[in-house]
Image (cartoon, rainbow, N blue to C red; front, side):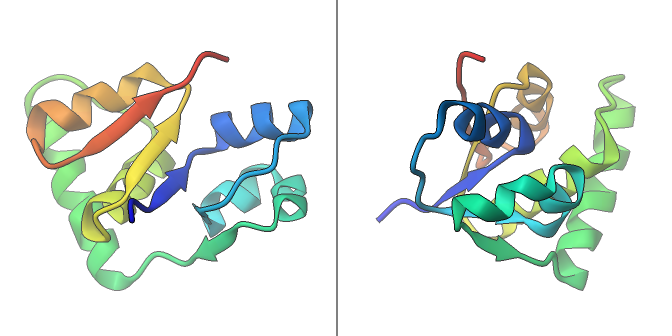
Length: 110
């Protein structure tokens, strides 16, 4: 079964629309928008290895001239490391797919 990791942008929309979701988010998303805890998703705390992946992603994004926000890089690293599909409204995650072909994400309409 496919595991879904939700980014803050999608979660804010779900919260506003009172959608029921199942899946995962990160503690970084919760820090950005604490009301996400009301959605009862499983909260992931990034590991040291995921921070190391994030550093590599950040370096590679800089090499191609496509830096994205640090929190989003860490979220992408969690998705990559745990073979999860990221759900977001932020199109800048497409830059991650340019440097990591195994990165799966879906852009939802806001």
